[in-house]
Every structure is written in C-alpha cells, then in structure tokens.
View 1 (tube, rainbow, N blue to C red):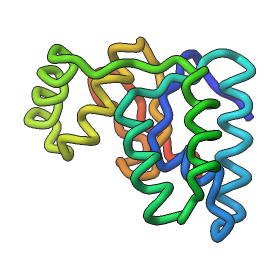
View 2 (cartoon, helix red, strand yellow; view 1 turned 180 degrees about the horizontal axis):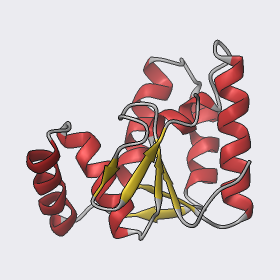
View 3 (spheres, rainbow, N blue to C red; view 1 turned 120 degrees about the vertical axis):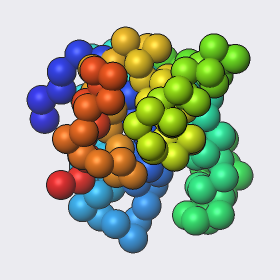
View 4 (spheres, rainbow, N blue to C red; view 1 turned 135 degrees about the vertical axis):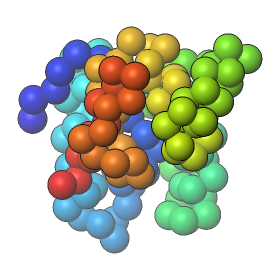
Length: 139
C-alpha cells in the first residue's frame, strides 16, 4: 500500500481494526495503519481518542482491557491536542465547506499537523478541503 507524506486517520479507520463483523475493512485498516506507523506518518487528535472510547465500547462492545490497550498504543502516535485555535479553525471550515462541525474539527487537526491526506469513511472521498485530500481507504 502506497502512502504519501503525513496522514491523519479518522476514528472509523482505527475502529475497523477491531471490528470482527467487517473482515475486509478490518484487514484494510490494519494494513493502512501498520504502514503509516512504520513510516511515522500517522497523526490523530485527542478527539479521535475520545470517539474511539465511545464507539468502541458502545458499537463494538470492546472490553475495558481492549480499550485501555488500544489507547496505550494510540497514545504512542502523533496526537494533536484540541485548543481554542483549533476549535476556531474548525468553525471556519464548518461554515465554509458545509461539513459537520466534528468532521471539521478532524479536518482542522489534520491541516494543523501538516497532513497531505485524511483517511476517512465518513467524508466525501476525493474531496479536497484547504489543501487536504480526503481518501476513503475502504473503496
């Protein structure tokens, strides 16, 4: 799998690594994350960690031990904090590009990290937002 420069991954990519009901997406997510980690090009934000805990426990029914282990592994990645400046930039993206505020917060974090690509199933693949290309890694 070829990756280009810095990449930000949305929560759904990290969740699919643990989703046994979606074996194809699970394999694709695992390959992508492994490659990005090897190249030290994987970026996430504190929002992604929060969403992982929520969706992992509710949707995937991950155990406390599974979530704690995953968080320990994800905390080794390049994790951006959410601050007032990031929130302000996300609001601008939200109103300009008419995408959900929480997706805008992901986009703003990826841009702040200097990422070239955002891997996400939730946004329009192929879309470019302020120089950041959105790619759906599952199609």
